[in-house]
Image (tube, rainbow, N blue to C red; front, side, top):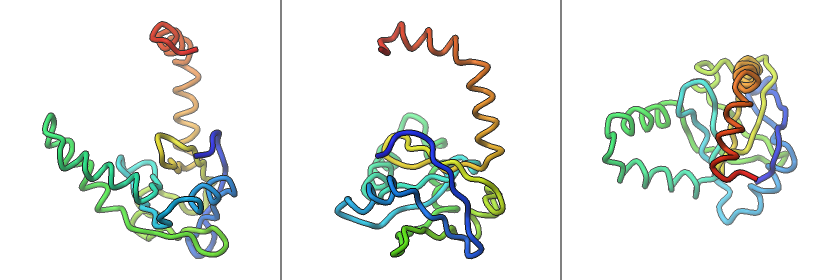
Length: 149
């Protein structure tokens, strides 16, 4: 999975052209099907289908907090759907996900996280960035103590 942040925007047909680095990664996989959803109803998540299956197994076997698993899985199923890249490396966002997350007419930010791509609006990105600015020093100290190099 590529590292770093990439920008994008939905076109007038609700398609997002994936940056070349992501398209190359997804095209290299055995299965080209992707699962596009949101777990938190604020940020979209694009999973290679094999990665999403790992999550499905997790939900099936997670007994520590069944209510949390049920709610997060509900979000994923309520807003999610299978997608595939077209010949121009675009994926189409279904209407429920676009509306819920306010993805239209805004800059989108794409970041690879734990085997999938997080897609956030500019407002969500700026909110997360501000929180990062305010808390980085304390978090970095804790992470270095835990072994970060």
